[in-house]
Length: 436
Image (cartoon, rainbow, N blue to C red; front, side):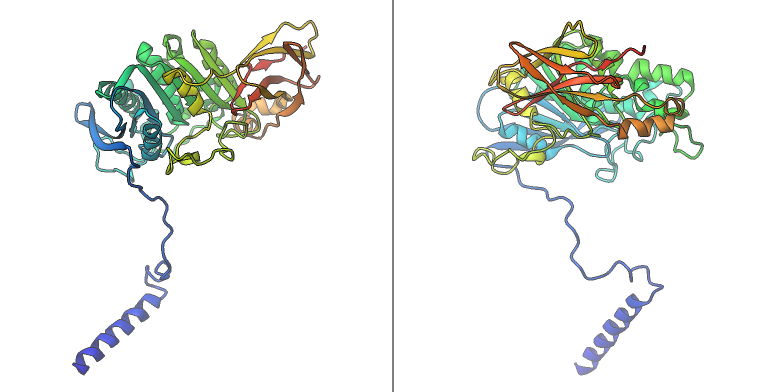
């Protein structure tokens, strides 16, 4: 027995000595410290049922989805929840919507989700590979399958017996926001309300202008590597802005004025193409976030006994998603305010009205100076300038039913931003000052 113990001790000591050897690949990583938990999968909250499924996109291609359903009887509004770049099915956000009384479906979208999470599916490829591949036709782009996954997930949501198909919404962030715009354009009257976060169309008015081709990029990873014919076909078939004229849903587009991808001009062009009810904001000095009331900050969100587990950023991307869908899909609460620019005889004075069912707590004009001439000639410099651009605030004064704010003489572009006491925030259209 003692002999066996001695051998074990020698073996352990020799193993430890080997691990300490600088040539051992484990030596630098086996530090004995507990690993950082990057995500904890919670059990479904009480009162809802969660299903995890694979569904067919086309041919043998499948996608994963989370379905969350309230346990209360009867029909419920439905909501499709679309993840952003490199993400995956938004399980917690789907559960949060189910807690509020919605049937929620959150799918993976090929070409956009991380294949490291569920890499055994037929359409799993390296992230972004084939996104801008257009040969021999549009269906070879993985974005085509990503859009199909979103649309099929919408059909799945509408097919569930618990879903009130007259009240279905779509919400998504980043590429999921882009997909939200696309789904609302393709689906027509199958969707009642959409809320796209950093999800404009008109890619040719956004970050595509700042891209450079690269011989070392993976196939289909960069739009700049496409031929002019491929770019035209991609925009015709896959750009959400070109689908916006078919939109029947009430639509909200959350834009960041310094967004690296959806530049303000692209956001405005998308809004201009929507024929029906629409609203939006531009979040000043923000890149892929909204540092405004009702935006990506959740400081005022408190625990609700009915929703004990999922609040704040775990439940939503923006705080104001909730009152938006409560109004449009449940008929609860009041609509969002609406800013309308009024005629002004003074070119340096902005006049506007606000149709607001809640008290307005802040009304400001945000303006930015023009880009330097050399910036406009260099795509890389322009892309950086959009992100770094400074938007300055000018307080608006109220005169009866009208607000007024001075437009500085150096302003090249401006917009109005107002917030109410819920809080939610909305903007006017983006105005480009004509050069003299």
